[in-house]
Amino acid sequence: MSSIEKDILRSIGPGFVTGAADDDPSGIATYSQTGALFGFSQLWIALFSYPFMVAVQEMCGRIGLVTGKGLSGVIKEHYSKKILYGAVLLLLIANTINIGADLGAMADSLGLVIKAPFVIWLIIITFTTLFLEIFVSYPSYVKFLKYLTLFLFAYVITAFLVRPNWGTIAYSTFVPHISLSRDYLLNVAAFLGTTISPYLFFWQADEEVEEEIVKGEIKAIGLGIPKFEKKDIRNMRIDTFTGMFFSNMITFFILVTAASTLGAHGMREIQTASQAASALRPLAGNLAFLLFALGIIGTGLIAVPVLAGSAGYAISEAFNWHAGLGKKFNQAHGFYLVIALATLVGLLVNFSPIGSITMLYYSAILNGVLAPPLLILILLVSNNEKILGTRTNGWLSNILGIVITLVMGVVAVSLLF
Image (tube, rainbow, N blue to C red; front, side, top):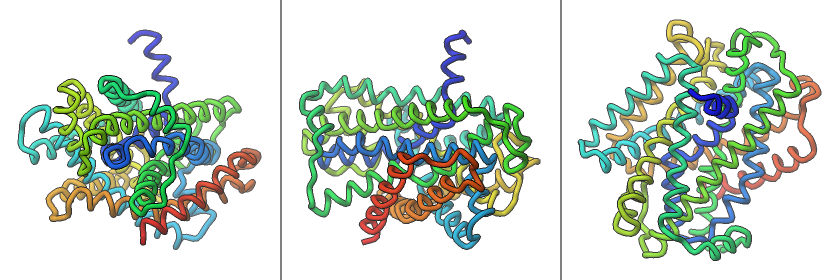
């Protein structure tokens, strides 16, 4: 490996992997459907959501970095256990459904590229993901996830291949088009619910702690006080800013591709990411189709471990189990069993009579309902000097955090009704 490659890998941290995981196959389906239904008119949301994503994930990363605990551990220590257990249960259910939808989308996409029965690809993907997460060492596994983020550039290339109208795109990005129609508002709710998801909150906080364990600053999650420096906070922020920018950039190009092809040709019924890839072939050619399909597979390989891992961290810290991807299976049985259970139940969900779009819908509802109370807790923790000392929120973080909490509260109500 060259020195340049090593420098790039070192610069990619938990924030960048978190941002990449945000563009999972279910997210790709949502963004593709947005472009198919509304053309370029909702491109502005990718720009609008960026500062709020940065603010929320930076708070989560700072909580993990300063305390040496994940969100679940901090909430358990300082706030109501009833709230914690309710949040963790909803997170597990939402993540399991999302895992099922993502595994199904990956299997569908692989079947489009290499012809084989759906069930075979589904089983191969599921057990490959479990093997990597449970039996590969943390440094090697994280390096693998970092390389997988390169798959997301497929959507940048695809957007240029379809030759969109960049003048219209620029106008739609910087001049918001607002409609009060039911479908438009519900799609905005689904868009934000997919983009600002609770599993990302838990994942980044714990991964910052995992990085401290690798550096030898603490022994394990929740054991010891991290010896972080000012530069560690700065690096975490840069990593988060970059990761969320990358996430929103990919969202932007997926929307551009879908609006320029599916939306422009009146193809409104796009319910899965693999369906979007199939629809691209006659409209934009084999290369655009192939890149889009490979992107789904790559993002799924990032997202499924993040979804299962965030559930594992949350439940393990809630019940004082040993946790961490840096531990071997015999050192953290409960943590890895939660990961395995969530992934295997996700596999089984694909054999239920529930359609994939219905699974995504209910997952979005759960994430949308869970996000506002969690955001309130994150704001409380981030402003608590007893927990973070001098590393509490600044005024800008608080303003952005409060605004997005209010917005996500409206999202929760709209998803329910």
